[in-house]
Image (cartoon, rainbow, N blue to C red; front, side, top):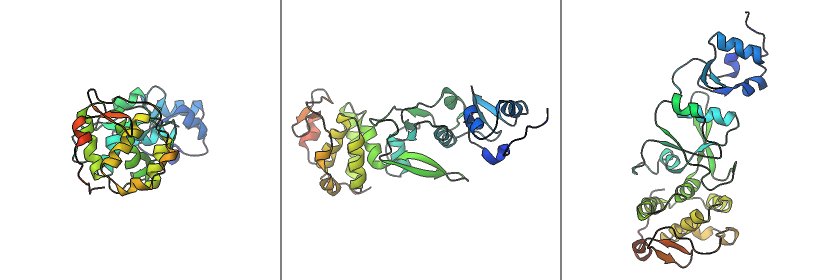
Length: 261
């Protein structure tokens, strides 16, 4: 069978390392017979049911993230991984898994074919699907692929969503101790966008605990902190201002000032 005619050649529209599906190829002008031809000719190789790439080196998680976003997935690097990429959480024992957030979990093939660190999906992180507040892009590779990533302001809220005990409180405490240069406009945006009352109350509690100057520029009236008490740790002490239970020792002790980020 002769190579099918197309408006563009396969290398022109599909960089090495990018994974695509058939709908993506159809939109680029490659019909079903053309795709089948390239698969039989091994110029496209399958990485999972309905997903293809050009032959090449092993895939890294950055290839996977860019590819999924190009196909319309709601997925970004967040939490501890975003802080580590920003250079502000390197001293924490956070393991080796790359933490992803968003409404769409990576397809199963990602866990099988991506080399390097393990992948972990942590759900929406307390934000609506597709919410852009607190999302920046970090460039990757020869083509400067933009990879969506939480800013420190949003990453802290994503982390707070999973704080349930004193150990978690202490780990996050180290982060807020260092969070002296958060941007008030971004903090305002992510606090307004977050749907997690728990994470927002904790964020405000930590910010007041360290008396960070940026927190004084936040318009608290536009932030929905919900109503009623929230028990976060068992046998904790109730903070009357934010109506949350926190470790008794932390509620009573004096916090040190931070100076890292």
